[in-house]
Image (cartoon, rainbow, N blue to C red; front, side):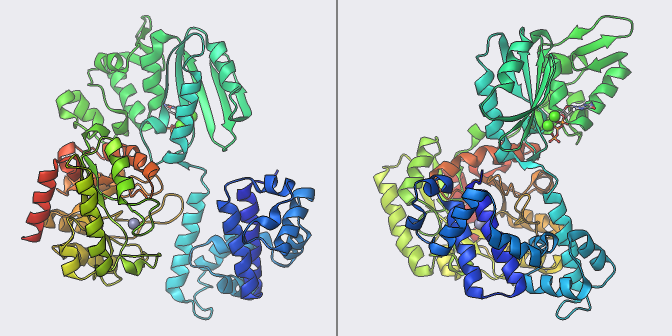
Length: 579
Ligand code: DGT
Ligand code: CA
Ligand code: CA
Ligand code: ZN
């Protein structure tokens, strides 16, 4: 059965292959548009087709409707098969390599006989690409880096934001199964890692067979991979693997600890147990020649080994064991979602957001925030509606009105997400920036600049005293776009000195700064913000992912500007400008 995603991918594929062949650009664009329309269509195209209503869909003409009809009836498209015979799949796949457009693919294919990714990599490594017209050594290097990034994307790890809702749904669905005392997700998901290999669920129950059967019968199960007395594995319809382990409630703490990991953390914990003459497994510890001591809480297990309880986000063997051995007060008091008083990045209909200022304000108020910063895009990003100095003034009037209407219960601050141009200059004049409450500068373009150049560019941007926050600093998109190659130490030292905050962007496609960079930034004295970059009210809920990332970075609330009371935020903004 063809889903909209598959159908859209097929038309995009047709466009790509015709592009390589150098077919009519107009026709190719039409295929790309159709792919876009189908991908964003709110209902299954299958339903539309069955109702005979394809012609009524805007953007789908007779020719395309005929092709969809053939696909739905036969599962195949003759036109596409003929195209495949001309451009092999391996060649079409080369279009996924960043920096390889259709012209280059055609050139490499025709002159070097490269017909797949492996051959392309070999050719680049052998230095065969650099001598092709308009290529050079730099392009060859970029293509090699692009291949590496494609390979990582193919590792099958899914983003935290795609896995967490599935795990929550499973936990909720099984909570009321007879015999279930406790249930939680464990593994990398509980540790809040940015990508997840598989979902691990642990359940304390007196009836393991019952919960196992209920798990394997959930509607989201596409395939049962394993069914034992206490362990089951399934694959979901979204192609996620989920492992369920059932234990007696007496073992809950030890089992949850064991399957939370990380493996590196567990190896250290087991070594500490061994030093004390204890062997450790997922049920508890056993003294030499003695009986198993079970633990129904994690705290009990850690305490038995002389360790304070360690928050799951820290369990990566990055110093948490040493700290926990010295006592609970040596572990950081990590930032929590509750500590956040505001959200400092979001978009409205003034640029590419879905709702107006009041809409975002009310949604944020409902979440319990005290203030928000509106950060619509400046004009050079080239999205519809970028802010000009004139439109910023008009937006200020609307924000003032919203603040009056909300009657002092809440404060909407005016900001802007100002483009950092390729040389580090800002996209708006200083007077316009100075009129904002806070300014966020972001790099969206030319992310592949060389290290020295892009570092100098960001440092120049944060050197402007009107800039308070550097948004999603690396520019990466998880599993999709590589981060920019900054000299991070230099950037962090510069930001700390200027008292410019670095953002932890909470969008699960970004999580930028990531955990290790945010930790280093905090160590070097940087201020941070945790913000959602929401383009709709619903996206304000992404904050949880940013908080997890900050906790993995050992971040304490005092470092995070949006835990501060509004007055302190405004004082900081003012001090920065008079530095
Ligand atoms: P993932 O799924 O790749 O994102 O990462 P995890 O950490 O969820 O790893 P996973 O699912 O293979 O196993 C879950 C946890 O179970 C892992 O973090 C630690 C524990 N674990 C699994 N296998 C072993 C093992 O062989 N030795 C030890 N010490 N712990 C293990
Ligand atoms: Ca896992
Ligand atoms: Ca697993
Ligand atoms: Zn942005």
